[in-house]
Structures are given as structure tokens and as C-alpha cells.
Image (cartoon, rainbow, N blue to C red):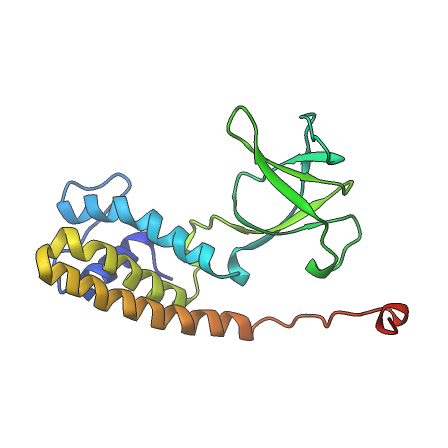
Length: 201
């Protein structure tokens, strides 16, 4: 499995940079490590958000808040590790198709609040995954090329950096498409069941 440093060094190698970094948290002192420390989290989180990855999908019971829920019945706290919300599920719901209506607001302290009419609700969401051992190989390749596209400007600079950034971004998209297809092939979704009374309408 690839570590954060492995992914950073792979990205640097895509650019033809022979330097390697030993640490980005904290950065070891080289300019490459400084750039990787700045751009790696943004590259990782952008790819996590762009697709509903199996390895990043979580489900959690929501914590009820005493905050004002306005015209909704309940207010819940957004889980701290939630990057993207997929569905608010009422108690007993078996799929996103049975998800409840909800809204999202920010309270006066800057915390995200989930508003819904569902009691004892749970959330299915995409999490901030920082453990690289959870990343499938194709995701690692997409991430390394995405990171390379962001490193090209500061490392190569000028027209050469801009051209290389464009090339790397294209390869990132190609690997991302393969990674998403591979991820989707490992999922079997239950068919949505429509009750007879609804089908007859």
C-alpha cells in the first residue's frame, strides 16, 4: 500500500523531478516537500468529493441538537468526518431511495446543522479519508497525477509548467474514470421496489 510520501514522490516523478521527499507533515525543508504539504490535502479531498467511493462511504446515527430547527422538526449535528452527504435516512430505511427531505444550514458558531422531519435519523455520507492504506491502486494513480498537475506550476514554472499541468490533469481524469468504473463494478445496488398501489397509478 502507498503512503502519503509514496504518493507525493510518485507525483514528483510524473514531472520528471528526481528529488524525493521523506516527510510532508511536517515538511522536511525542501521546496518539493513544502509544495506537497500545501497541495496534497486539496488534491486528495477533491477526488474524494467527486465520486461516491465505496472505501469512503460511511453511515452514522446523527446526534440530536437543541438548536432551533425553524420549520423542521429536528436539528442534527453533521459528523465531523463528513465531506459530502448522500442521504438522511429515517429509522428503518434500507436504502437512499427511502431517504428523508432535509436542509443544511450553518449555526452562529460556524457548525453545519442538518434539518429534517425524521426522528432518530442516520446519515450516509462520504468521509474525509486520510488513511492511504484504504485507497485502491487506481485511486492512488489518479491522486498522484492530480497532485502532479498542481505541483507543475510551482516546480516547473512558466509555459512549461502550464503545459505539464494540463497534461497531468488529463491523465488524472483518465485514471479517475478507471478508478470510478472499478469502484462501481464492486457495488450491487438493490432494485427500487414500487408498491403495487403506486405502480398502478
